[in-house]
Amino acid sequence: MTSLLREPAAFRAWCDAARAEGHRVGLVPTMGALHAGHLSLVEAARTAGATRVVLTIFVNPLQFAAGDDLARYPRTLDDDLAACESVGVDAVFAPEIASMYPAGFSTGIALTGVTEHLEGEFRPDHFDGVATVVAKLFGLTGPCVAVFGRKDYQQHAMLRRMALDLDMPVEVVGAPIVREPDGLALSSRNVYLSAPERRRSLAIVTGLRAAWDRYAAGERDTTALESAARGPVAGGMDRIDYVRVATVGGVVPVEGVLEGPHVLAVAAHLGTTRLIDNVVLGHDPRP
Ligand code: AMP
Image (cartoon, rainbow, N blue to C red; front, side, top):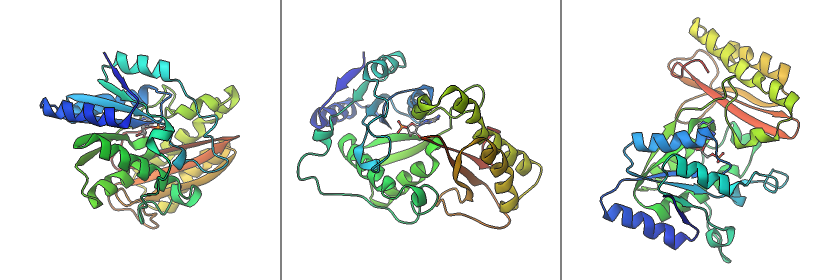
């Protein structure tokens, strides 16, 4: 039976009690509208040693800019709870905005370096909002293993950095991207896509595959790899934010000849929907 917790104090008490019983707590932060990608993180938490898994559902206003999709972001709590129940999540923490950010809330976490490029260039302040809410979740949870999807590659890299830099008692683990059978990365935002847009969205994974194939054939030049991906992406999507090769830990764009694994990351728009995806060349299987 999954416990539903609404108040931060109740959530903290639940985590403390689990540890007092000798459990290793696994934390899976989400914004809800759960799909198989989210649920894979629950399993990844167990694989990483968690014996009690908590999944949080909070559409964090701090990480949306004006004009983003905060108001229309899908909210499906009843379905989410049923999904959590089905995979044996032990507790769901789904707080109200006012209990996470009460009047007088004045603190923000900001990282440099890892947040500067790629998403950071197109969504200023987004990562500060994510870092702030995740720091709160880490503070409430206490010692745990926290699992994030590598679908949001830079977010995962940033949170790993934050836990390290701020001596948080949290082991940050990254989990592989879960895809639809045709290759589209699962995302809560995929529900925004019309049927024609859904077909065209495959341009992104087609681009990642083209670059992966070139890499597998020995290509190591970043310009060649990026343009192999960019062609298909440009052919299907309405607008590209970036198609870029970057370092794996620091997420710094690289130009020239690659040595060792690097992430190839894409962000592009279809109508009013923005999609992101990536593959770690030299590490991930073909997407
Ligand atoms: P979100 O609810 O979109 O904020 O995502 C919550 C967590 O689920 C983040 O760690 C995401 O990276 C992860 N996630 C979302 N989609 C996928 C996916 N297709 N595969 C793996 N992890 C995912």
